[in-house]
Length: 447
Image 1 (tube, one colour):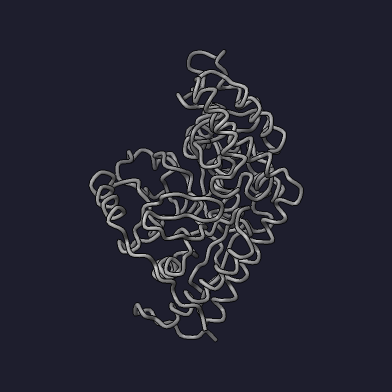
Image 2 (tube, rainbow, N blue to C red):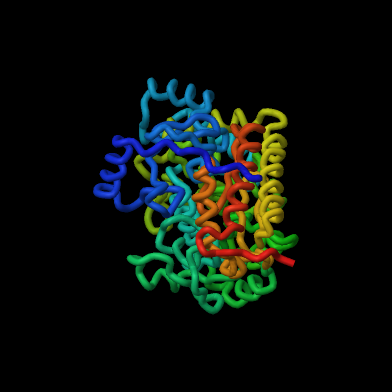
């Protein structure tokens, strides 16, 4: 028999007051794991693999701030580095040694990185990578893959994972109100994992393309054999910069990111969050001749502007350096993969035992369950999944003391064997509840 839900402590008056203030003052940009108001929470603190809300409820955390806490929350090495730097100042605008040392480490570890620029977020890093590519190619259009998330800029918010009614390839679908209609004209869209279709679109529009951008692991959909290398070949043939968006995969899949993990090197790469330790960080790295377009020695129409008040911030830099030092520890990634595989396979086994039509896609460090029996290979195949069961899974796991995103499980270095054991028990309970169909979604055993 699966474990029953734990007894959650009732919401305190203090947390209820904070939630009321949130609703009044912060109606946008505030995230909770559940869409149900009953599960809304305000986080008080976090350490290692656990977070605690303001009512004293503790959860095993697989949201991890949407991925930045690869080492876990409040890792001692990161805390010490940041505390030490705070006494030296929080920001200078000018170049500083932590930023230089971080650049040195990234160039050493990331295959495509000959030079780089430091910024404050993944959205910013992608935005600047596209600007560099446009300046380099003297073209304006980009090609992206349907379902990929590349941040919150106008051009990035086209045909991402929120697209419910796809357009005919290569037309783009706008994913937010408030975006100029002309932005869609600058984006061409191809299906992920279909190298023949992607190649055909690139060949047809190659003279208009400034760049091809791809999440090498698209959300949690792994690339088919030959897909990334095929993109590398066709973009190299037409001298179109290939950009990897590694904001999620950079340093998470390997020290060299997805480039190292899958063995394909792009021209430019956006990364940052997995080594940020929760501090604002975005990195654009890649070919020196492309990054050189942003040199302060360039002037006029040929100069690419990439600066910001908090770019190359020393606090973020020392946090990232502390993370990288920990990640260099021998056996670190092997241990992370072992934990992740155990949870990934255990998740699938418990869905199978409950006769739920579900599959888990991704890599050991980041993966996602889909409630469908159909293969998940691209964005359009994900549209067949039962999203209501996914929403219910989140709530049932919260009942059992586990936090995950609506999509992914992020696994950290801080998750313990005990955490995995408790999580698998929670998943068994949740899967049983979904099978029972308490919410009117009864599922029949699959043949």
